[in-house]
Length: 51
Image 1 (cartoon, rainbow, N blue to C red):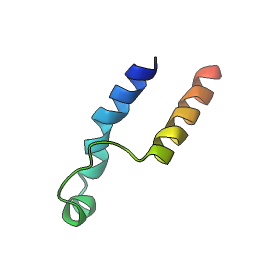
Image 2: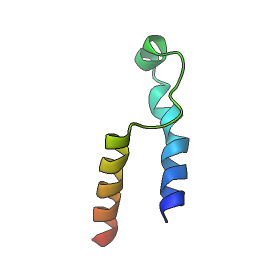
Image 3: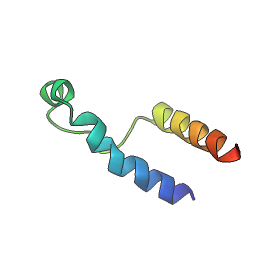
Image 4: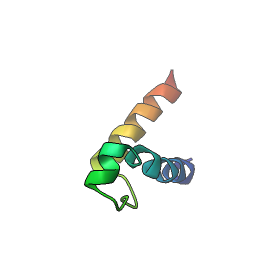
């Protein structure tokens, strides 16, 4: 389950940074999300799966 979650966030990372404002400020997309954001996303997903 965990590798699937990590691969999903890794594939979504470029999409979130491809906006015009983000693209001009940082032309190089980061390879991965920051750790606090990843932990927050994991907590949110686990809470959704429990419901």
